[in-house]
Structures are given as C-alpha cells and as structure tokens.
Image (cartoon, rainbow, N blue to C red; front, top):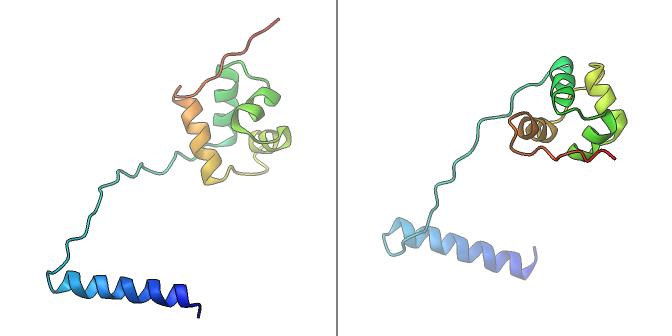
Length: 103
C-alpha cells in the first residue's frame, strides 16, 4: 500500500470516529437524481428523427454517434446504451434540437 493511500484512509477513519463521537459535523448535499430514460424502440427513434426532419447522418451528429449506429437502432438490430437513451430523450423532449440550415 502506498503511504498516501494509507494516510488518506487513516484520516477518513479518524473523521468517521470523530463524527460518531459527536466531535465533527459532516457536510452533505441533496442531489436530485432523474428517473431512468425511457426505453425507446426502433420505431420510436425513427419517429423522433423524422419529426425534426433529420437525416440519419444529421441525427448521428446530433447524438455524437455513427450513422451505422443510428441505422442499427432503427432496424432493431441494436438497442441504444443508457447514455444514448438519455440523449435521445433530451432530443425527444425538445430540450436539445439543433436547427438544420438548408442551402
């Protein structure tokens, strides 16, 4: 074990003992944790993309994934990860919906 790790561990244990004895007040924060994102199915993902008139390429850029990934989601071949589901939800709810500038 490294000396720094041991010192940090010892300090943490000493703080826990002091707290238990009422000699130390600890700070805490309440954090609101959102509900898990919806489970978007292949047809839902395609509907969201089409609602914003995004091509698969543009939608892929919006979500920072490859076109192949979007294609595999829409075909039902693959399911989006939890992080991708959250991004899809953010687009679906209109929180993030970049405009397309057509020339």
